[in-house]
Length: 187
Image (cartoon, rainbow, N blue to C red; front, side, top):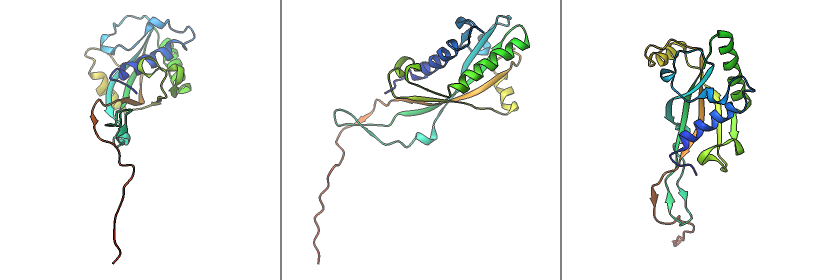
């Protein structure tokens, strides 16, 4: 069961995963969910994991109603795909490349996040997050970066995380039909 905090919980899960596995390349305080628009142009090494888009997962849109403990039927959860922009910042291109390479390696090695790695409302659930590269054409990447006014393009990669489930609060009374009797006569 996931509540409305799941988007933030997923972001914190991924940030924590990167923070605990950088091997000293970056201090944990230098790994953030800030937008590139909010990051100053100083040369302090930094890694940004910015959530830039959320879409409904069309493959899970038609899930069935779920039975609750009280016998009522709950509407299916809202299923979402999250899209992140991963960007490295440093005083030299070489350091940026190392930071980006290590972050990409961590996300590749932990492409399915489950169990004790999950944070917040996802902790101690059976949820799984699938993290995959989501390369977008250079033209679309330029459009994305154009939203960050007066920020020059930086080496970045886009990722898709699926599936974030936000439970519905709507319920419908009644019970499921378990048994049905048909009476018919043979002429």
